[in-house]
Length: 272
Image (tube, rainbow, N blue to C red; front, side):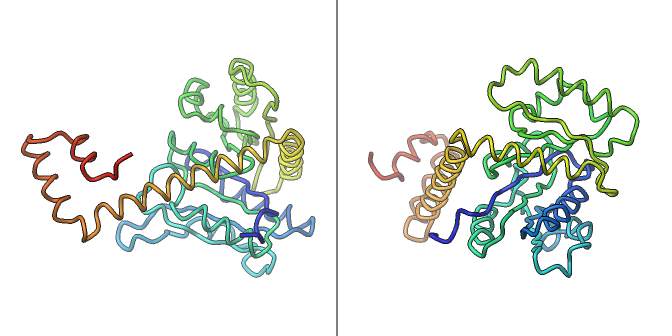
């Protein structure tokens, strides 16, 4: 653990089809041009048959397959809502420990619950497209709250200017103080706007490092991970063989309306 902490974690999220994988590929190239290494965790949908990652994102990042300074790992969600694999924090820690300067997390793209990436990254990039929908939908999805940088990808398409104005208008109504997320227009396949995107990410990194927010984000992330591990371990113990018979009895009692679920849980849980 003492060898971790120098890598910077970047979350890339947005709706399916926004071009996240192609943009991640272009960002890898821009980072490598600066002589820095990058590890990519591409969280894919799970195969309904094998449970493994479908690997669609890795196909789109084939430009860096022979680069020793780039590591790409596909991870299956395995049905986990939130756009991230449950193993993502551990994978980030491993990539950090082996010395990657940047760790990019590209989420699966599942809509409203995509906001989970905000708790797993130092900087969150939200990718949208021209004609992506109205600003009300953006707020409903929580994107306005989690974005540190907005990207209008495929900005060579009609409607890019309208999307820019929508984002500007919604940001003026959110009441956010401090950092105001910049809006960067990109065309990922050609690399247009990617250097400007990396500059915007650097700007946010400098801001949260100077204000102490980076430390607070990482501390909140550690607290959330610890709570998740404790919850999983407690559940494992309570449903283990040692408690299996009583657990099954209580399930029967609940289903037969002899006891309510809260009382049953109190019986299994250790006293305060």
